[in-house]
Image (cartoon, rainbow, N blue to C red):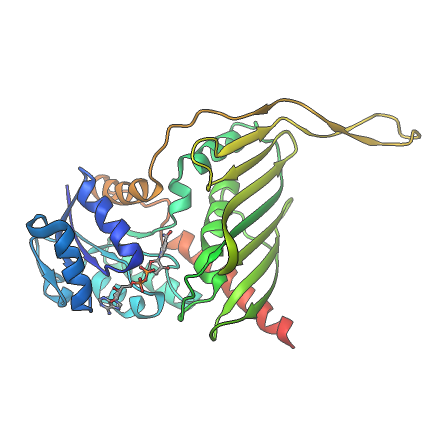
Length: 330
Ligand SMILES: NC(=O)c1ccc[n+]([C@@H]2O[C@H](COP(=O)([O-])OP(=O)(O)OC[C@H]3O[C@@H](n4cnc5c(N)ncnc54)[C@H](O)[C@@H]3O)[C@@H](O)[C@H]2O)c1
Protein backbone atom coordinates (compact mmCIF):
# COMPACT_ATOMS: atom_id res chain seq x y z
CA UNK A 1 0.00 0.00 0.00
CA UNK A 2 1.42 3.36 -1.07
CA UNK A 3 0.82 6.35 1.22
CA UNK A 4 -0.13 9.38 -0.88
CA UNK A 5 -0.71 13.07 -0.29
CA UNK A 6 -2.87 14.62 -3.01
CA UNK A 7 -2.48 18.30 -3.90
CA UNK A 8 -5.41 19.84 -5.78
CA UNK A 9 -9.09 18.98 -5.43
CA UNK A 10 -10.64 20.80 -8.37
CA UNK A 11 -12.59 19.25 -11.24
CA UNK A 12 -10.09 16.48 -12.00
CA UNK A 13 -8.84 16.19 -8.43
CA UNK A 14 -12.23 14.80 -7.36
CA UNK A 15 -11.72 11.87 -9.78
CA UNK A 16 -8.14 11.26 -8.68
CA UNK A 17 -9.15 11.34 -4.99
CA UNK A 18 -12.03 8.90 -5.56
CA UNK A 19 -9.68 6.43 -7.22
CA UNK A 20 -6.94 6.79 -4.60
CA UNK A 21 -9.58 6.19 -1.92
CA UNK A 22 -11.11 3.18 -3.69
CA UNK A 23 -7.91 1.41 -4.73
CA UNK A 24 -6.42 -1.28 -2.48
CA UNK A 25 -2.95 -0.24 -3.63
CA UNK A 26 -3.10 3.33 -2.31
CA UNK A 27 -3.83 5.07 0.96
CA UNK A 28 -4.67 8.78 1.17
CA UNK A 29 -2.66 10.32 4.03
CA UNK A 30 -3.79 13.89 3.41
CA UNK A 31 -5.56 16.07 0.89
CA UNK A 32 -4.27 19.56 0.21
CA UNK A 33 -5.65 22.47 -1.76
CA UNK A 34 -4.89 26.20 -1.68
CA UNK A 35 -8.64 26.91 -1.46
CA UNK A 36 -10.33 26.18 1.87
CA UNK A 37 -13.66 25.82 0.04
CA UNK A 38 -12.27 22.85 -1.90
CA UNK A 39 -11.04 21.21 1.31
CA UNK A 40 -14.50 21.69 2.82
CA UNK A 41 -16.02 20.06 -0.27
CA UNK A 42 -13.70 17.07 0.09
CA UNK A 43 -14.40 16.75 3.82
CA UNK A 44 -18.12 16.59 3.01
CA UNK A 45 -17.45 13.54 0.82
CA UNK A 46 -14.78 11.66 2.76
CA UNK A 47 -15.03 12.91 6.37
CA UNK A 48 -12.59 11.17 8.68
CA UNK A 49 -11.62 8.58 6.03
CA UNK A 50 -8.98 11.11 5.01
CA UNK A 51 -6.96 11.94 8.17
CA UNK A 52 -5.97 15.49 7.22
CA UNK A 53 -7.32 18.28 5.01
CA UNK A 54 -4.76 21.04 4.77
CA UNK A 55 -3.61 24.07 2.81
CA UNK A 56 -0.04 23.23 3.88
CA UNK A 57 1.24 20.26 1.87
CA UNK A 58 4.88 21.17 2.65
CA UNK A 59 4.74 19.59 6.11
CA UNK A 60 4.46 16.20 4.39
CA UNK A 61 7.63 16.64 2.32
CA UNK A 62 9.73 15.47 5.26
CA UNK A 63 7.21 12.93 6.63
CA UNK A 64 8.78 9.44 6.37
CA UNK A 65 5.28 7.92 6.37
CA UNK A 66 4.55 9.55 3.01
CA UNK A 67 5.73 7.66 -0.09
CA UNK A 68 4.28 9.79 -2.85
CA UNK A 69 2.40 12.89 -3.94
CA UNK A 70 -0.33 13.22 -6.55
CA UNK A 71 -0.17 16.71 -8.05
CA UNK A 72 -3.52 17.63 -9.59
CA UNK A 73 -3.33 21.38 -10.10
CA UNK A 74 -2.99 23.60 -13.15
CA UNK A 75 0.13 23.07 -15.25
CA UNK A 76 1.85 26.42 -14.68
CA UNK A 77 2.06 26.35 -10.85
CA UNK A 78 2.68 22.59 -10.72
CA UNK A 79 6.33 22.93 -11.84
CA UNK A 80 7.68 24.59 -8.67
CA UNK A 81 5.76 22.21 -6.42
CA UNK A 82 6.86 19.18 -8.46
CA UNK A 83 10.51 20.18 -8.00
CA UNK A 84 10.06 20.38 -4.21
CA UNK A 85 8.43 16.94 -4.13
CA UNK A 86 11.15 15.28 -6.20
CA UNK A 87 13.95 16.99 -4.25
CA UNK A 88 12.35 15.68 -1.06
CA UNK A 89 12.81 12.15 -2.47
CA UNK A 90 9.08 11.46 -2.84
CA UNK A 91 7.54 9.66 -5.82
CA UNK A 92 5.39 11.88 -8.02
CA UNK A 93 2.15 11.30 -9.93
CA UNK A 94 1.78 14.48 -11.96
CA UNK A 95 -1.14 15.56 -14.07
CA UNK A 96 -0.77 16.01 -17.78
CA UNK A 97 0.69 17.97 -19.43
CA UNK A 98 3.77 17.09 -17.39
CA UNK A 99 5.14 20.63 -17.87
CA UNK A 100 4.52 23.69 -19.99
CA UNK A 101 7.72 23.25 -22.05
CA UNK A 102 10.50 20.78 -22.80
CA UNK A 103 13.12 22.41 -20.56
CA UNK A 104 10.81 22.01 -17.57
CA UNK A 105 9.94 18.41 -18.48
CA UNK A 106 13.66 17.64 -18.73
CA UNK A 107 14.35 19.25 -15.38
CA UNK A 108 11.65 17.19 -13.63
CA UNK A 109 12.95 14.01 -15.27
CA UNK A 110 16.53 14.78 -14.20
CA UNK A 111 15.38 15.44 -10.61
CA UNK A 112 13.46 12.15 -10.56
CA UNK A 113 16.56 10.24 -11.70
CA UNK A 114 18.87 12.07 -9.27
CA UNK A 115 16.57 11.35 -6.34
CA UNK A 116 15.81 7.79 -7.51
CA UNK A 117 12.05 8.23 -7.45
CA UNK A 118 9.23 7.31 -9.82
CA UNK A 119 7.91 10.13 -11.99
CA UNK A 120 4.61 9.23 -13.63
CA UNK A 121 2.56 11.56 -15.83
CA UNK A 122 -1.15 10.87 -15.90
CA UNK A 123 -1.31 10.01 -19.62
CA UNK A 124 -4.45 8.06 -18.82
CA UNK A 125 -5.23 6.98 -22.36
CA UNK A 126 -2.29 4.58 -22.46
CA UNK A 127 -3.89 2.85 -19.47
CA UNK A 128 -7.25 2.59 -21.24
CA UNK A 129 -8.22 -1.05 -21.95
CA UNK A 130 -9.15 -0.21 -25.56
CA UNK A 131 -5.86 1.51 -26.32
CA UNK A 132 -4.08 -1.47 -24.77
CA UNK A 133 -6.14 -3.80 -26.98
CA UNK A 134 -5.16 -1.79 -30.09
CA UNK A 135 -1.53 -1.77 -28.98
CA UNK A 136 -1.63 -5.57 -28.74
CA UNK A 137 -3.24 -5.79 -32.18
CA UNK A 138 -0.41 -3.70 -33.59
CA UNK A 139 2.34 -5.60 -31.77
CA UNK A 140 0.85 -8.95 -32.89
CA UNK A 141 0.80 -7.76 -36.51
CA UNK A 142 -3.02 -7.81 -36.78
CA UNK A 143 -3.23 -4.13 -37.77
CA UNK A 144 -0.39 -4.37 -40.26
CA UNK A 145 1.81 -1.32 -40.72
CA UNK A 146 0.47 1.98 -39.46
CA UNK A 147 -0.83 4.36 -42.16
CA UNK A 148 -2.62 7.05 -40.18
CA UNK A 149 -4.10 8.24 -36.88
CA UNK A 150 -7.12 10.52 -37.20
CA UNK A 151 -8.14 11.81 -33.79
CA UNK A 152 -10.64 14.32 -32.46
CA UNK A 153 -11.01 15.36 -28.86
CA UNK A 154 -13.66 18.06 -28.59
CA UNK A 155 -16.00 19.46 -25.96
CA UNK A 156 -17.58 22.73 -24.85
CA UNK A 157 -14.92 23.97 -22.41
CA UNK A 158 -13.39 23.97 -19.94
CA UNK A 159 -11.48 27.02 -21.22
CA UNK A 160 -8.12 26.87 -19.45
CA UNK A 161 -5.95 29.93 -18.79
CA UNK A 162 -2.47 28.47 -18.51
CA UNK A 163 -2.38 26.10 -21.51
CA UNK A 164 -4.03 26.00 -24.93
CA UNK A 165 -6.39 23.31 -26.24
CA UNK A 166 -3.48 21.47 -27.82
CA UNK A 167 -1.49 21.23 -24.59
CA UNK A 168 -4.63 20.28 -22.71
CA UNK A 169 -6.01 17.66 -25.09
CA UNK A 170 -3.57 16.58 -27.84
CA UNK A 171 -1.16 15.58 -25.08
CA UNK A 172 -3.29 12.43 -24.59
CA UNK A 173 -3.20 11.58 -28.28
CA UNK A 174 0.54 12.14 -28.62
CA UNK A 175 1.12 9.80 -25.68
CA UNK A 176 -1.12 7.20 -27.37
CA UNK A 177 0.77 7.46 -30.68
CA UNK A 178 4.07 7.19 -28.81
CA UNK A 179 2.79 4.11 -26.95
CA UNK A 180 1.24 2.28 -29.90
CA UNK A 181 4.02 3.03 -32.37
CA UNK A 182 6.71 1.96 -29.91
CA UNK A 183 8.15 5.42 -29.34
CA UNK A 184 8.24 6.94 -32.82
CA UNK A 185 8.69 10.71 -33.05
CA UNK A 186 7.42 12.84 -35.96
CA UNK A 187 9.92 14.40 -38.35
CA UNK A 188 7.46 17.06 -39.51
CA UNK A 189 4.98 19.04 -37.39
CA UNK A 190 2.33 21.49 -38.60
CA UNK A 191 -0.25 23.28 -36.48
CA UNK A 192 -2.87 25.96 -36.84
CA UNK A 193 -5.21 27.34 -34.21
CA UNK A 194 -7.54 30.14 -33.21
CA UNK A 195 -7.78 32.09 -29.98
CA UNK A 196 -11.31 32.76 -28.90
CA UNK A 197 -12.43 33.54 -25.35
CA UNK A 198 -9.05 34.23 -23.80
CA UNK A 199 -5.36 34.34 -24.55
CA UNK A 200 -4.90 30.67 -25.44
CA UNK A 201 -5.83 28.75 -28.61
CA UNK A 202 -9.32 27.37 -28.07
CA UNK A 203 -9.22 25.21 -31.19
CA UNK A 204 -6.16 23.61 -32.79
CA UNK A 205 -5.45 21.27 -35.69
CA UNK A 206 -2.18 19.42 -35.47
CA UNK A 207 -0.73 17.45 -38.40
CA UNK A 208 2.30 15.22 -37.94
CA UNK A 209 4.40 13.17 -40.31
CA UNK A 210 6.08 10.14 -38.81
CA UNK A 211 8.27 7.65 -40.62
CA UNK A 212 5.58 5.61 -42.43
CA UNK A 213 2.39 7.20 -41.13
CA UNK A 214 0.51 10.46 -40.63
CA UNK A 215 -1.41 11.81 -37.65
CA UNK A 216 -4.08 14.46 -37.59
CA UNK A 217 -5.25 15.63 -34.18
CA UNK A 218 -8.14 18.01 -33.64
CA UNK A 219 -8.40 19.58 -30.16
CA UNK A 220 -11.31 21.85 -29.31
CA UNK A 221 -12.93 23.59 -26.37
CA UNK A 222 -15.65 25.09 -28.57
CA UNK A 223 -17.61 22.13 -29.82
CA UNK A 224 -21.37 21.70 -29.29
CA UNK A 225 -20.83 17.98 -28.87
CA UNK A 226 -18.31 16.00 -26.85
CA UNK A 227 -16.24 13.78 -29.09
CA UNK A 228 -13.42 11.41 -28.16
CA UNK A 229 -12.73 9.53 -31.36
CA UNK A 230 -9.57 7.81 -32.58
CA UNK A 231 -9.43 6.21 -36.02
CA UNK A 232 -6.33 4.22 -36.87
CA UNK A 233 -5.59 2.92 -40.33
CA UNK A 234 -3.29 -0.05 -40.75
CA UNK A 235 -2.37 -1.94 -43.90
CA UNK A 236 -4.31 -5.01 -42.69
CA UNK A 237 -7.11 -3.61 -40.54
CA UNK A 238 -8.58 -0.29 -39.50
CA UNK A 239 -10.12 0.56 -36.12
CA UNK A 240 -12.37 3.24 -34.69
CA UNK A 241 -12.30 3.84 -30.94
CA UNK A 242 -15.25 5.97 -29.84
CA UNK A 243 -14.84 6.68 -26.14
CA UNK A 244 -18.24 8.37 -25.90
CA UNK A 245 -20.05 5.08 -26.49
CA UNK A 246 -20.92 3.06 -23.43
CA UNK A 247 -20.34 -0.53 -24.61
CA UNK A 248 -19.24 -0.94 -28.23
CA UNK A 249 -16.36 1.50 -28.05
CA UNK A 250 -14.06 -0.33 -30.47
CA UNK A 251 -15.00 -1.29 -34.03
CA UNK A 252 -12.53 -3.28 -36.09
CA UNK A 253 -12.78 -3.16 -39.88
CA UNK A 254 -11.13 -6.06 -41.67
CA UNK A 255 -10.91 -3.86 -44.74
CA UNK A 256 -8.28 -2.14 -46.77
CA UNK A 257 -6.81 -1.65 -50.19
CA UNK A 258 -5.24 -4.44 -52.25
CA UNK A 259 -3.37 -4.62 -55.53
CA UNK A 260 -5.40 -5.98 -58.44
CA UNK A 261 -2.31 -7.23 -60.23
CA UNK A 262 -3.69 -5.56 -63.38
CA UNK A 263 -0.98 -3.08 -64.16
CA UNK A 264 -2.69 -2.01 -67.42
CA UNK A 265 -6.30 -2.37 -66.27
CA UNK A 266 -8.46 0.53 -65.11
CA UNK A 267 -7.44 0.09 -61.48
CA UNK A 268 -4.14 -1.00 -60.04
CA UNK A 269 -5.65 -1.12 -56.55
CA UNK A 270 -9.11 -1.93 -55.26
CA UNK A 271 -10.97 -1.79 -51.98
CA UNK A 272 -11.06 -5.00 -49.96
CA UNK A 273 -14.19 -5.50 -47.85
CA UNK A 274 -14.35 -7.82 -44.87
CA UNK A 275 -15.87 -8.35 -41.46
CA UNK A 276 -16.70 -5.51 -39.15
CA UNK A 277 -16.37 -6.72 -35.58
CA UNK A 278 -16.90 -5.33 -32.11
CA UNK A 279 -14.73 -7.24 -29.63
CA UNK A 280 -15.75 -7.71 -26.04
CA UNK A 281 -13.27 -5.79 -23.90
CA UNK A 282 -13.98 -5.74 -20.14
CA UNK A 283 -14.52 -2.24 -18.84
CA UNK A 284 -11.77 -0.78 -16.70
CA UNK A 285 -11.25 2.73 -15.40
CA UNK A 286 -8.19 4.21 -17.16
CA UNK A 287 -7.53 6.61 -14.27
CA UNK A 288 -7.63 3.74 -11.77
CA UNK A 289 -5.21 1.80 -13.98
CA UNK A 290 -2.91 4.84 -14.19
CA UNK A 291 -2.85 5.29 -10.40
CA UNK A 292 -2.34 1.58 -9.74
CA UNK A 293 0.42 1.37 -12.35
CA UNK A 294 2.16 4.22 -10.49
CA UNK A 295 1.75 2.38 -7.17
CA UNK A 296 3.11 -0.87 -8.62
CA UNK A 297 6.11 0.92 -10.13
CA UNK A 298 6.97 2.18 -6.63
CA UNK A 299 6.43 -1.22 -5.01
CA UNK A 300 8.29 -3.20 -7.66
CA UNK A 301 10.94 -0.57 -8.42
CA UNK A 302 10.44 -0.25 -12.17
CA UNK A 303 9.94 2.73 -14.47
CA UNK A 304 6.45 3.89 -15.38
CA UNK A 305 5.17 3.48 -18.95
CA UNK A 306 4.39 7.20 -18.64
CA UNK A 307 7.81 8.12 -17.27
CA UNK A 308 9.76 11.35 -17.66
CA UNK A 309 11.21 10.25 -21.00
CA UNK A 310 7.74 9.78 -22.47
CA UNK A 311 6.66 13.12 -20.97
CA UNK A 312 9.65 14.84 -22.58
CA UNK A 313 8.90 13.33 -26.00
CA UNK A 314 5.28 14.46 -25.83
CA UNK A 315 6.13 17.98 -24.64
CA UNK A 316 8.90 18.27 -27.26
CA UNK A 317 6.33 17.64 -30.02
CA UNK A 318 4.01 20.18 -28.42
CA UNK A 319 6.85 22.74 -28.30
CA UNK A 320 7.43 22.21 -32.02
CA UNK A 321 3.70 22.51 -32.63
CA UNK A 322 3.59 25.75 -30.64
CA UNK A 323 6.33 27.18 -32.89
CA UNK A 324 4.34 26.04 -35.94
CA UNK A 325 1.24 27.75 -34.50
CA UNK A 326 3.16 31.02 -34.11
CA UNK A 327 4.58 30.66 -37.64
CA UNK A 328 1.08 30.14 -39.02
CA UNK A 329 0.00 33.49 -37.54
CA UNK A 330 2.51 35.43 -39.68
N1 LIG B 1 -5.64 13.15 -17.04
C1 LIG B 1 -6.76 13.70 -17.49
O1 LIG B 1 -7.50 13.11 -18.28
C2 LIG B 1 -7.14 15.07 -17.01
C3 LIG B 1 -8.44 15.55 -17.18
C4 LIG B 1 -8.74 16.82 -16.72
C5 LIG B 1 -7.76 17.61 -16.15
N2 LIG B 1 -6.50 17.12 -16.01
C6 LIG B 1 -5.41 17.91 -15.43
O2 LIG B 1 -5.63 18.08 -14.03
C7 LIG B 1 -5.08 19.33 -13.60
C8 LIG B 1 -6.13 20.09 -12.82
O3 LIG B 1 -7.20 20.38 -13.67
P1 LIG B 1 -8.62 20.76 -13.09
O4 LIG B 1 -9.56 20.82 -14.24
O5 LIG B 1 -8.95 19.88 -11.94
O6 LIG B 1 -8.34 22.25 -12.55
P2 LIG B 1 -9.19 23.03 -11.47
O7 LIG B 1 -8.88 24.47 -11.72
O8 LIG B 1 -10.61 22.59 -11.47
O9 LIG B 1 -8.57 22.57 -10.07
C9 LIG B 1 -7.29 22.89 -9.64
C10 LIG B 1 -7.25 22.87 -8.12
O10 LIG B 1 -5.91 23.07 -7.69
C11 LIG B 1 -5.91 23.99 -6.61
N3 LIG B 1 -4.60 24.65 -6.58
C12 LIG B 1 -4.12 25.53 -7.49
N4 LIG B 1 -2.88 25.91 -7.15
C13 LIG B 1 -2.58 25.26 -5.98
C14 LIG B 1 -1.46 25.25 -5.14
N5 LIG B 1 -0.37 25.97 -5.41
N6 LIG B 1 -1.49 24.47 -4.05
C15 LIG B 1 -2.59 23.74 -3.76
N7 LIG B 1 -3.68 23.72 -4.53
C16 LIG B 1 -3.68 24.47 -5.63
C17 LIG B 1 -7.05 24.93 -6.89
O11 LIG B 1 -7.51 25.58 -5.71
C18 LIG B 1 -8.10 23.97 -7.48
O12 LIG B 1 -8.92 23.41 -6.48
C19 LIG B 1 -4.61 20.05 -14.86
O13 LIG B 1 -3.22 19.87 -15.01
C20 LIG B 1 -5.32 19.33 -16.00
O14 LIG B 1 -4.59 19.34 -17.21
C21 LIG B 1 -6.18 15.86 -16.42
